[in-house]
Amino acid sequence: MRLLLAALAVCVAGAANALTITFDNNFPNDPQSGLTTFQGTSQGFTFDYAPVYNFGNQINLHDDNGVLSTVVQAVNGTKFTAQSVDLSGLSRVFKTGSGPAPALGTQAYNQWLKAGTATVPTLTFSGLLNGATVATQTFGPSALNTFGFSSGFTAIDQLLITLNVPNAVKFPFGLGSNTVWCDQWCGEFNVDNLQVAPVPLPASGLLLIGAVLGLFGYRRLKTT
Image (cartoon, rainbow, N blue to C red; front, side, top):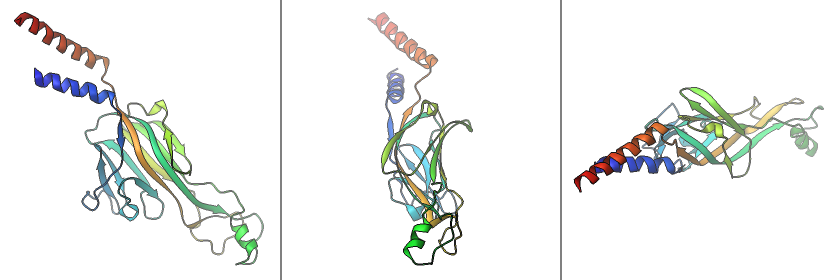
């Protein structure tokens, strides 16, 4: 009976406490999940990362041989609620001007290279439940900040993180007008401190806990 009560207490405490996933990895001892990616485990959740952009304590999504997407999920497969995440992002996407290119190497040419308005890279979070998307939120480049998730990310079993990069020329040589281009690479995002909460026990589970505790109290009364 004591073991049962202890287990019930753990369940109740776990349902009440939020958890911060810090994305610490153990490279190169983590298992390889793909040709250029490894699978890390942090606070009981798994995720993929690329060793070429490995900072040890965050996920770096990068379009130049980095991770383009990753799934965060509990090792034991339990549901969770995504509450907030720390994000920073950088764009190196530009667009040339509408007119003809000025002479190469001049100040006018350098201004023309970035005269247009380009679509920047974004990062999309998708909440999944049994393989179906139930919620999405997309963020653009920004300085390090904490962003909250909507209520749609409640009771999901996977969190898919996807880097969205616009079609672009990777190097600024021989560009025409209105051309989207990237300065060697297009963008990156750093993901850290994902705060999640376990899904509370359903009403039937709470009733069971109450019944067990009531039975235990009744038995104690009978023995006194």
